[in-house]
Image (tube, rainbow over all chains, first blue to last red; front, side, top):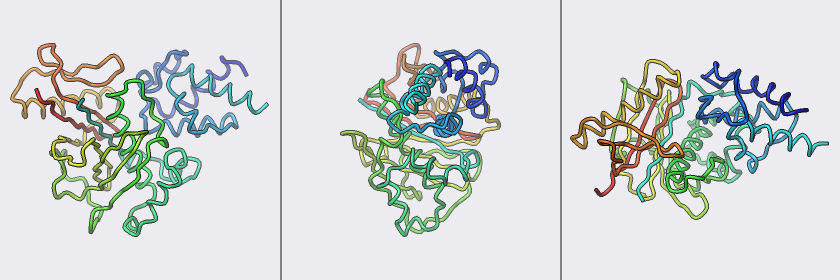
Length: 85
Length: 223
């Protein structure tokens, strides 16, 4: 799965939790989940759970510090997908 | 260095079903924290409220410590609530009116906690209404010098929340300090600061919003 494909899927993961829907179409690696997408921190665990289900991976708490911006989320998902190969 | 940290959880905005699932709460609570819920005093408190109570304490502690260590990242399970006392004769109450403010918690029915992160130990106080949970933390066990407030607002979109919580805090600060024209600013890492004529005031502030609730805490410096 490429970074572009993961980015496309991540938009669907973020969609229920962002109040900045306009920005969702133009997110890139630098987009900050809290500052830019206005996702409440209380929903970060939801995003982890949804990403786990979508990619059939497990994100442990040591990895949760990578849920900061879109780029680090993609890095984390790619890392977990490669671990499962 | 003075600091402060607060957090609000709107209980109308949480997903109760998901919160009760192990895969969800295990990313917030450690096994030791989960045993805190087995105290008899928690018998009348739903598990989902317990999870979000601990979340609010942890996020408050994170905000407090991030002011001191700007590089800190919030990983809930690494913040450990080691003690949590339910107020005696606790019963759920509705959040009455539009807003409530205080300095310390006096005789209010506050949940008192101790939370650790690395070598840091902080003390928390939380109020739990039917509609929301609000927490603040402090380095000192005495929270009487912690000013706090909670307000019900008209809308829950991010820009409205942001404007409302800043006005709520500024109004209180101006009243207490007998000042006019205070404005909010941010540090390079996004921590809120209060400016008076362009100069940063010696006051540590923390802001929070969730759903239709906003809240602040602040601690005044010596100057």
